[in-house]
Amino acid sequence: MAVYQIIFNIILYFSEGLIIFYYANSFFQHKYNTKITIIGITISHILLFGIYYANNTILNFVALFVIYCLIFSLLYECRFFTALFNTILLLAVMVACEWCVIFVTSSLLNKDFYAYQESIPLQMFDITLSKLAYYFICLILIRIFSKKKVNTQNKTGFWELMIMPVASVFALFVFRYISLETLLSNTANILCSVASLFLLISNIVVFFIYEHSINNASELYELKAVKQKQEIEKQYLDILEQNNKDLKVFTHDIKNHLEQISNLTNNTEIKEYISKLYGTVNQYSNIAISGNKTLDVIISKYNTLCANKSISISINVKTANLTDIDDTDLSAILNNALDNAVEAAQQSKNKIISVDIYTKELFEIIKIQNSCDFVPISENRKLLTSKKDKYLHGFGIESITRTIKKYDGMLDWSYDEKSKIFELTIAIPKSE
Image (cartoon, rainbow, N blue to C red; front, side, top):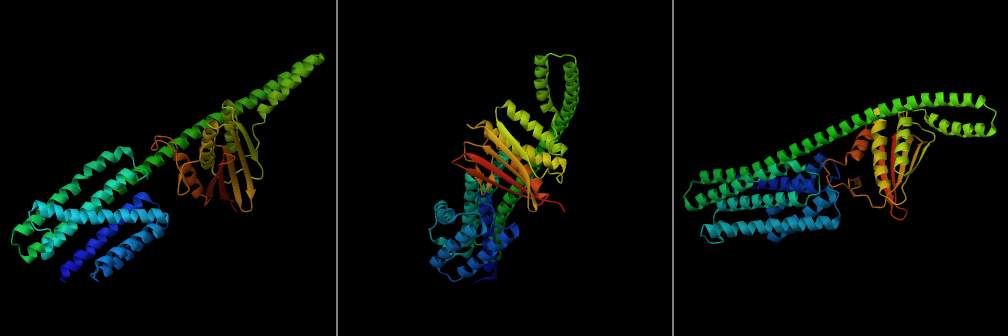
């Protein structure tokens, strides 16, 4: 076998590795980091490359089936039957593309179906054409069925880019026609084969770069949305804090007035009535309950909010007041978590929320429970928004996750279908 054929096959298997990496990344989460995933896929395709030279079609197919199954099930968060389904799907598409390309090219060029076996350059063109068609179909499957976030504003750009693989298929077909109809030198045939292979790789690289730019744009959009939400919350808390200060001054003055009025009369009924008013007013002066100004403001906010929405809320600040957490971060964590709790409780039958903040061993714990009549939507234990426009919502949990990572904290959640209670637990290590 000529050296250029070996090089051609190496690059071809490299291209197949890129395709399955792109496909798997579009549907599933990594079990490991990207570097380990790439190494795993590279090693598996080196094995496939070695098995190819056994010249046994059945062995090649079985090896491809087994290795693809292992890639999905070992390197990605993918159940066995899901891995099996995707493996069968990809192999079916791959085989169909190979046979369709040979059939179409032989029919259009009015040549025998097995003519490609008589010429190595023709084999290379047909193989490259089939891999490009295989990649083209994988792109369509990803775009239609992938559940991963893709900014809808960029879908048009994706379909416009599809002109590149279509144009490449036409160019490869022309190369094949020239190679078949014209007596080219061996060097010319090699150059045409190499050019066709680079067309395949360029298509893969272009879509990799496109997806990378889309992911970066989506992350930037999320960061801006989270930052904007935090700024709005901070402004709101500043206003609420000032209102609370004004309310404390006002209640202090009212209590003094009530005491003065009580001292001006000897009427028992009036004194009892003033005593009741005094107790009611006194409730509004006891705003500070935790010793953490930001936490007290947030508690005050959600006590009022839940009262207006007819939601029963209980907040217990026991052995922790979260003073180790920056005010902005504390606001991001609690406001996002309690916003979600209020939204779920409001739509539920029982309408209850309980918040417990306490210390356990080396951690400060925030435990929020709320009534929730519907099972939360999640993917690989990651909570997803239930709102229709997923590109304008769903930043709450993302903001909480980003914030607690700064403190090496942990987040966990559970849902009891029997009691219809959702529980969110946040654990943040205590500072030394």
